[in-house]
Image (tube, rainbow over all chains, first blue to last red; front, side, top):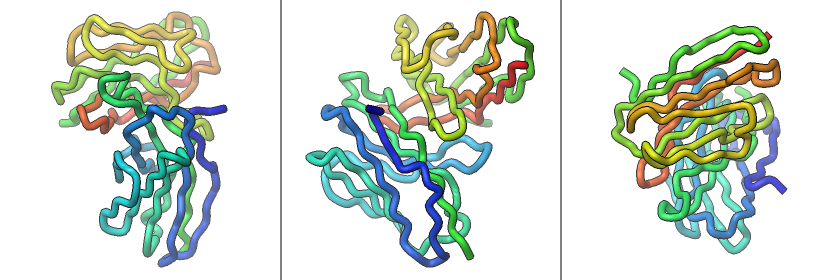
Length: 114
Length: 111
């Protein structure tokens, strides 16, 4: 079982719709959760981080974390063609326990159609 | 100037050659990482270092070695490159919040 799993996609949504990206993880001591966006040929860039159960909103992005179910998701509202990219879920342990050692899922390719 | 700088950005080499990818950072972070990215496989951790005297293997360390020359410098070496090491390589550092700061990547092709 991979430590971090995502649906590879591609996920295709029409412009203006909500895109929902999902991620599960296997290490129960994981404490920090991140979503990175990566455009083709570029380095990943952080778009959301979440550390506690519940929802965290930042503009059009909402991250959701459920530690009991070992599940983290990213919602993108009012999707735009510029959101078309690969979205990487990453998980790490507490800083005092190999924290910062991020383990990534394989990424979900999102395509937003005009 | 970029906070995390990788050199070279692109390299084509032949099977059996020794290759070094270099990384330097100006963020003052202690923790540095080397990741490899292949299509459909996401980012896989090769090696990481939590300070100058600390080196740890990641998920896929076979065929690679690293050197942490200073807090700001972390090099990745392929002692004898093989074609399946053709990939995009990223160096990164972390803050205490766990956020990774990536370099721009080094694309390596082994013929």
